[in-house]
Picture 1 (cartoon, rainbow, N blue to C red):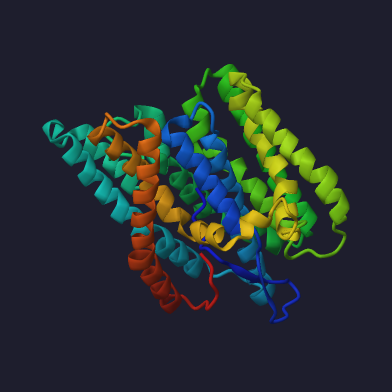
Picture 2 (spheres, helix red, strand yellow; picture 1 turned 30 degrees about the vertical axis):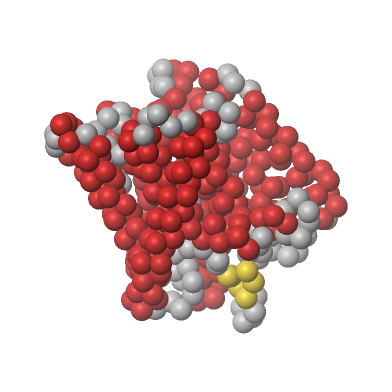
Length: 376
């Protein structure tokens, strides 16, 4: 999931002091979370929760790379120490708090099971941000209640350990932005080839493909490539016309997304689906950022939608633990009742975490880093 700091403003690459809020991104976070939540609340056979995670990945790649690009344009360098410190202070405080609470909830839900080697191993895997490969190797049994969804956070953590270094190499190489994007697209193509090898030659199952960093990093890289070249916030020259964007490219992107969701071939879903969705999100994001007042995207920028977007990290951390806790404690409740009750409790807990943990961590982040910008 996307763990980018909400309500980001970025400057253009002209080094002028004017700042620009990136429209629609908080709204995309809200949409992505709702897809995930409704899917986990019992409608996974109808609602594509996995696509919500793909949106989070794409958004995270776009936003973080936009900020890195802006920092490099301003100072001709990227402060790696500050970058990683920002990510630690953004991700770890809420993550470890909720993980501990989920472990406590697991024990209270089934005290007879006690603490086992399996549960200790699963907890350590989550704590060390290798939950995705733990699930691939051992399944999600023994994990703290509802914490198996944290696999996506592990993917992002792995990716951003490496990507800033790669991006600086591309910037230092002197090659133009368009060629930098081609390098990233080339890596996306190699990831697709790797998925095909795993599926068709090595018999990998869907979990291996869906949860592996090596098989899902292209979902983040597509967003990174958009930030590098053709960025709707930073690259104002040679942009496609709004008319073409609204009435051809955006509908084409939506059509590709729908086709990728409706075509149910398992081999397709494990290989081409992620690539098609990454490509299809290009015109959707560009249109939403450039045309936030268009009726199609207006709702993404409503105040309450943006507010939920600010809370999505905590919402994502908490929601499945809440759903599973209520389902186990009150099995007699219907699906709708569990869903509504879970959403209300998730909202309350997430807002509390945002106020008591995320905001203080953000304040600390500004103090311990040299950057005064609202970054990751």
